[in-house]
Amino acid sequence: NQGLPDYAGAYLCRALGKNSMVKKLELGSNKLGIQTCKELGAVLTSNAVVEYVCLECNPLVEGDVSGTSSVTGRNNGGDGENNDNLSGIQALAEMLSMNKTLRHLSLWQCMIGADGGKIIADVIESSNDAVVMLKSGYNAWEDSTIRRIDAKTSANREIRRVKREAKARQREHEELLRLEEQRLKEEKARLEANEIWLEEQTKERAENRRKEMEEEQKAAKIEKERAEEEERKRAEDAALKRKKRKKTKKKGGKRKKKI
Image 1 (cartoon, rainbow, N blue to C red):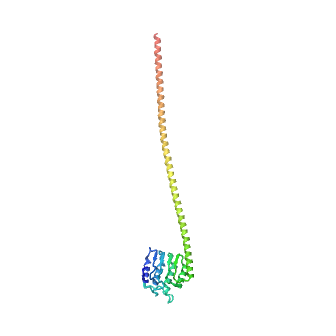
Image 2 (image 1 turned 135 degrees about the vertical axis):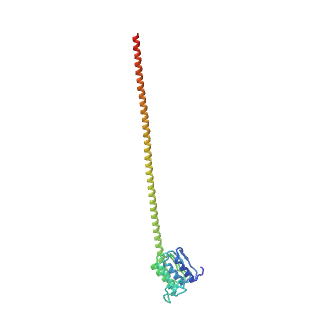
């Protein structure tokens, strides 16, 4: 609501040719007319960023009706005395037939008239699946025109709802797949960790058993050596006893001879 004249709006729209950020245009309550509509139509034909345009309370069928824009110097297709005042509306309609990004368009109280309304309705009805809200009050449009636009924008909303739900289901499905993949990875990691733990436990038990066997062998060896030593001592003791007995017998025999 800055009271911008038509040529200023045309310059502003022309600058959108390099836009990659702005999604919303609030141009309501100015003095924008045919030049702005033509420049905006030309820019938004290939724009994939802008989703919301408000042109309400602008005299869109007033201004320069020549075929050449004072902003760009190019011919914008003036097509006859009776239709020149709708050339800006025609430019917007051509844009709507190709633009796939614009969702909201407000043409409320723009003095477009019944013929301009039919131009917009024809293209919305036949060629546009993107616009879901088009404000058109106070333009002297016929009720049939308004109903046609409302029916198509309502259908577009339903299409977008179905697409959103499909995308939501797809995202949910992808999320479930991601979670399942993550679960499988975690399960695999857990199983691998368990296998490593079991392998380590097996090695540890084997090592403990080996040590136990070594200890048992050492103990058996010591016991064997002890038993052998005891046997050796018993044998030595027995031999010593036999030797003593022999000596005792010899002494006893000598004593008998002397008597």
